[in-house]
Length: 591
Image (cartoon, rainbow, N blue to C red; front, top):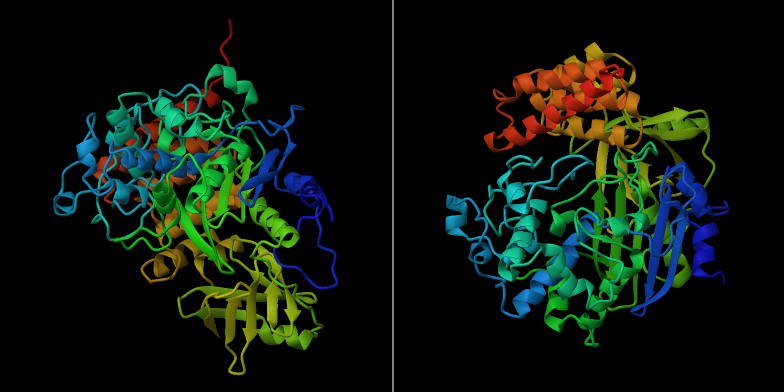
């Protein structure tokens, strides 16, 4: 049997295996295809690190290799480590899990409201994302940008580039991911210990766990910079300044290696299974068991929970500007994995690596290969068509030569493999089966996947279908007509997100086209013009990008879509982008 390293290097498995077809791929080839310059992995079996590996380079165009000790930004995987520190302090009586978090805060207090008066926000709420707090995540600060304090981030005042953290949803009623809530935890830890956050985390977690290559220090200390990977955009270009700085340390500020994060996973596994560990059994239980007394299904304190083929797992992903990471551990200690990359496209490779290890080591989660069968032209034509399911989603199946293709408007065209049980996508296991009444049944090869039924439709093209044909005017009109229809997918937020997906995939031309349609269909939306400006800037259309940002600023104060609490941060963001664009447009000065 090949070693783990050999299997990863030359034997990556695709999302869906097809019987009789070779499927193995080389990791370095996949990294090149996805424009991921560097990647590092640590594999855990029986609560021990059994393999570490590193591929690629610190920065595109350089020849400095990634090693086992290369630092990556863990991004949101900072949150489980933060949770371990906060829960350890609660173990010691320094923080209370159920008491109002305001009792631990000295430098700042949550803005009072009827919601917090009825149900005070607690540490348990914040660690399980049930505190009703705002601000999903943070973009960090590029090189040269002034850094705010954590209190300024919480207040949403300059130089912070994010909105104020407030409670606008009843605490304890629903899960809503909130980096803003984790930043409250950061401030509580600092206020209670009276020491810098990085120092407290070093003492409580990093040092005791032997995470010698890890730090929460922001900015990254100068003596560590040579050890750090540079972040990269989807097109493979280097993040300006190599990486962003995150004063939101608890939510996104950890620099670490897969080996060090694996030590964290193992410490949790050991404590959860009654073995000697630097964590208490109670803290490990809180990190790996569903939160009691709330509606937080699938959420522990600091981690997210899943079950794969009967094996309980705790996990967390991370996404900072130019970095992607994934951490996972089986609660029973049988296996675990940490993957870190220096690219916005890095997460595309995660499932491939996990599948490969599943096949080799008997981990749960590997599906059986599908068996292809021959289908003639009549069989393809019988399934091809446009369908609408119960949720209002449009499904377009197109015959393309001798293949059936799932066509996503303004998206990818995915070939489907015919089998005895329907047509299957090898990219994600999506499956469609034609029924006798002309409808199609849609599900996935994954166990317990949701099933939907879609019926044929002769309705006019959607906005995205018109746009895919290059018909902007028709697309705008279709969008305006459908915008109020529930499930139409033509609301501003959904379209805006689709535009950013295209930009993230490096498909700048279509991203610009889509976000231009949004700005045209919603002409009074400041955010629509801001997003269009960002797309134009990415396409190198500086003059048009400046005009879009100027329009966004002109609409901002009167835009009812933008809460008053967010306007200062949005104005600062747009004005900062204008400064960058005008500086780039200005001719170089002569001596």
